[in-house]
Length: 182
Image 1: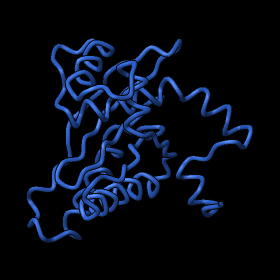
Image 2 (image 1 turned 135 degrees about the vertical axis):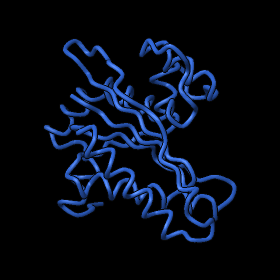
Image 3 (image 1 turned 120 degrees about the vertical axis):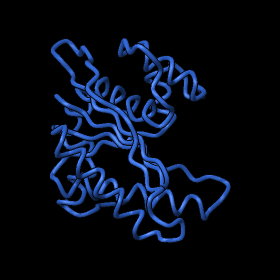
């Protein structure tokens, strides 16, 4: 199974692609960022289109079976939270438009799965991603978070699949197909 992890951001969105082999062995495929610095800073629609198109290109290139996206947290600055939410929406929409199931995880869940505790610093996540995937160097922070989301889904994927089969959990893709339900 190929997993595409996405760490959404309005300026820089991290991505990470992993293959999960039998026995839950992880194999690094690719990682990097989609940047919107080419669009004027005040042109939000242009930046969102760059994210949408960039995620679409990643899907076409790497052909993932599923995506794992970070859930936006509410921070002190409501304007920043709204902008981040719109960037995340562009990413999720691009994934769902291509028929991918989307699993969602909080930063706390990802840090717990990758570093062993939910308060891990970015450098700790980078070091653990490097170690878990046997990378020659630590990936940049945005890509490390995206790879961490893919790792989280690889570990939680079987349990999530069992819950979905039982009707106890929904992915974003299934929610949009059936409509959001309370």
